[in-house]
Every structure is written in structure tokens, then in C-alpha cells.
Length: 122
Image (cartoon, rainbow, N blue to C red; front, side, top):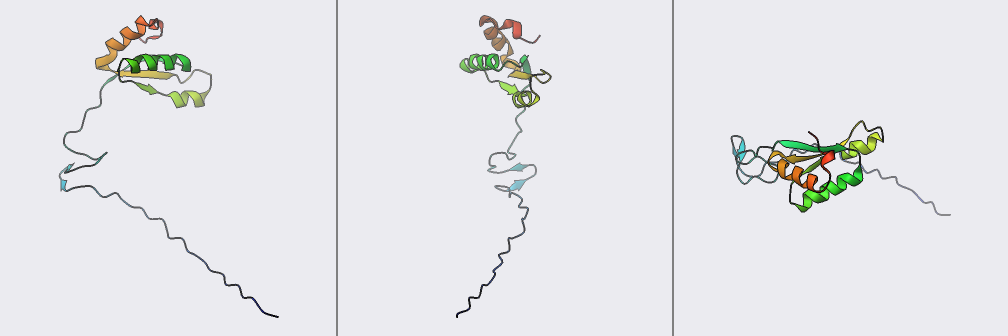
């Protein structure tokens, strides 16, 4: 009768290490030469001020407004969409559509022309 010997081998998993991303280019004060995406380079662009156009929990109407603004080439941002879904139907957290201040007048005019003026925020 032959004997079979089983050898247990253990493989150790290396400990996870924190790796800090290395900057691209040469360090010069608060700027990086040849900076990549997300890195500081030159003057920091100022975030535009945004105006709130509408606030509601009607996803169909939100989609219509997105289509109108997008079709006109007006930049916009939809906020709290996911929070509104998580919150349910109590209408506590409403979806908001924001546009940069410099596009507010044009955006409001488009929504009034589309018959959606009653939904505009003051």
C-alpha cells in the first residue's frame, strides 16, 4: 500500500500599503509644470455662481427641462436627484436644476416659452 503525503502550502497575502500619487513635473511653489488632470497648474478657475431655476419631485418634468436646456446649449446641473429617490415620496428633498448666472435669463425665457413658467423659482 502506498502512502500519499499532503503538504499544506500557505500563501501569505501582502499587507495593503498606502501609495501616495507622485506629482507630474517639477514642483514650483503651489504650481506643477506639465500638470495632469486634477492637478494645480497656473491660476485656479473660479467656480461660476449658479441660479436655481426649478425645484420639484417630478422626474418627467425634470427630463423635459433637461431636454430644453440641453437642446439650447445651456449648461445646467441637476442636484439632489439621488437623494430624492432615496427619501421616497414625502417631498422633503426635491430635485433642483441650476444654471450659471450668465445663462439664467435665457434659460428662464425658454421655460416660459415652453409653458413651464409656473415651475420657475422666484
